[in-house]
Image (tube, rainbow, N blue to C red; front, side, top):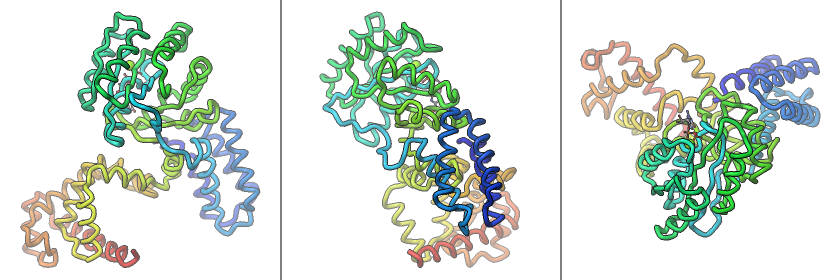
Length: 435
Ligand SMILES: Nc1nc2c(ncn2[C@@H]2O[C@H](COP(=O)(O)OP(=O)(O)O)[C@@H](O)[C@H]2O)c(=O)[nH]1
Ligand SMILES: [Mg+2]
């Protein structure tokens, strides 16, 4: 996510770290680099200007040039500016459904921005996180395949589906859908609409009609982050005609440059509510400006990682694991268990990137096949007997040779794993003492 922006912003900051003090010239130079980084990330020039002014103001106000650790202080200043432009701190992430059910939500946006996918993602989100019963309503009468697409997604996410008769006028469809929603006693109704390749009068008029008939609790603009500033212009055009509530920013898993994310709130006043991070129905996250700023500056996003972990690990499993760590009875068997849980959380790369400094670690590990290493580790541990897994101390030369053969690896691979495991054990014991 935002890889190139991250590198471009961090490189001048890293230079500060080495040289100690900051001079007027080195600050100027860093500001120039950040300016270039933002423009290249397709951030709107007005936002770039304002962003740099904020950073400059803070740098002067906090007497950065007299500071003994200007690098760290500067990172904090840039972090604060990022949080500010991504939407500010202390905002509630996501959409709060404060209305009597069934709560109607309307999704609008250009063609291909991710509306239909986001309808299902949002539905699954409300179902999983808030135990809501959700009805998906297709209202895209332009592309016949869109209805089927939504039906399939509804099935994947196990959500209710309204079988719209798309030969009917759209306002009629949404009214009947709301009637049906009351009968089925659903909590949330999500209406997917048609998009165009660009904003046009007909599209706006049509959305206006649907809106009047549906009276949505929220009208959500779905924006493709890959389109950068364009997404912002379109959001502005929509907002002028049909007041919007907020934005779902999609495709942040791709090589989006960050321009849309950093510009949209400042230029339209609309908060980013959710971000799409993949094609699957569960690839949606509530948008936290502070967490994203943290990720951009490679400070990690441990909070999101913990939330992700909570989705795949039961509380008992987590407690058990912590317990063993603190008692120093954490064995290779537990190590294997942890590795398998990590696998459930997604790719090694995805997890690493959410750790502080993770992007830098990834950089250093370039060429190392992390998934392959993990498979190897798994094979080695699986080739051990139960007794060996419980107590690695008994692993003498003979046993190691047998394990290497059994797992199709080399003795040095086995040795390396044991050393790494012992280091991990030591570290855990230390952490346990600290806590
Ligand atoms: N990688 C990625 N792809 C997405 C995301 N959201 C949507 N897509 C893909 O973008 C394409 C268009 O999405 P769709 O929901 O049909 O857009 P619509 O025309 O606005 O309804 C599809 O191939 C989706 O799978 C996302 O967050 N990440
Ligand atoms: Mg669609």
